[in-house]
Image (tube, rainbow, N blue to C red; front, side, top):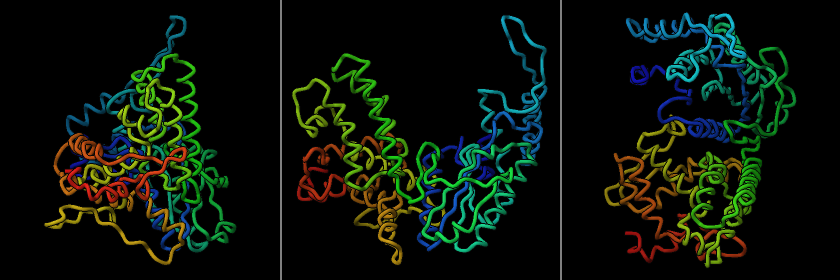
Length: 446
């Protein structure tokens, strides 16, 4: 069924949940890119986050089966689905005594492979009547975004919200209006002061300075200071718990715990929020240095311990992830950041494959230009283009092969993060600057 739906392009293009090649990251990157694009056009960007109440449990199975049939899936497959999903009963066992069987009238079977697919089919037309805004979803997490210049634009966004509320009623889904959230980006404070949005319960939607979106704190200034501070705090807490709980300071168990429990907190969706300010880079880097300095080893400095433990600095790891994701986009393994104006390859006989780097948009604020320059849409291609031609030309191979060859190359690129007064000889510890600094040793990279 999934193959049939994908081959015929029947999934909602704005849905990133439970879809091959799509993830929280792909959804967040597309969403953030649209925000930046609207701001670069001189508009505000208003984002309304919707919240469904027990979304998976409220799936109307008869409606879902009707939508399955409308996709062109019929015959024995449809009959099998109908037999599997309907006429189900459940009981509750208390102290060995079962309750009377009760028919299950909504919700896909818990833990089944079909559950997520049926839910995506039901949600597939949620934005069918949305005319003026953009809708993006990850499973049931849905948000509407629109560029705002005048008061009438907010009225159009409210109209699109109303159409989603009608869809919810028509599909027997229920919103939790109290949990709706609003983020308003942009400098036009007059429109913000004069307007507001209402929920499905006709309650004014509360505006926030920052909102947790799929695990990342999105702030209305387009920066990720709140998120980075939160990441540092949580990573330090986990590191402290490890050091309190385990007496050993041997390298193997300590590094295993570090990689399993702390690194995921420090790197989740880092391609989106990768910091560029020196203070933020060092704040994150100090979390790793504070941990690995407790490991018993004769090497004393951070740089030498990274080499001894075969670790990358956190800055190097984040840039490595950006390069890999850029390569995936060029290989069509993940959705492009922007479908109409996203990353694209450039081929030259002598230089090989590179990724097109957009020119800075003039007329926007210096702060906005800096944000765009350091976002994956620009930073990713710059880092990718700094690689040797042999790596950039690598195509049609498994992701693991590209990662292995990238790591084999990065072994020769100095990793010298600025921590506790240590200063690299290059302009910064960025892969691009370190490669440029060692360009004379080109034989080192071949």
